[in-house]
Image (cartoon, rainbow, N blue to C red; front, side, top):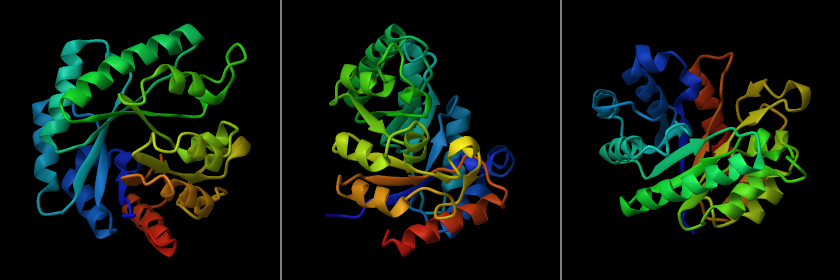
Length: 251
């Protein structure tokens, strides 16, 4: 079984993404990553900016993450598909927040349609969870409703193990339940509980990263992606610490 490649979500770099994108990419490459997950480019100019910044780094764009808004708009879907393909990204990732079960069901319908278009274009559409999808609505956990209402062939999952934990489920159990449905997984660490907004580099929080990684590797994902929303450290250093920690676990 081949090891997954290791990427990083660029969110931790904050405003540096706008101010010094080439420097961001160099820092990621120097930290030992194989690729990056980026925010969805807004147009051809931004695509070109990423292409230029990636030159000479050896990094792949493994995926582009865009919010759920406007996925019902065929023009927006076409633009996002075109941007992902131009960057060589395999995954198109989205996330959202809905209030009622009917809203979640409608979101599932939209995702099935977007997923079909992505598959036709050689891309993989994924849904990325947060903690709120685990809060019961009318006795139902929306995350499981979304999984049931979406076609596994059209909509994959991109679970965030930290938000699964904060949402009240064990990452190992969640991963095992949907094994085979996620080609990419976000690994995040933090203090959890009432301090769940206190994010940390991998291995420096309260997550059982080794157990989650063991469960994840059993499902043969293509990518393990480090994601840290914010850090008190310099972002490049933060990325390096998390990457070095995964190396101690054999990844």
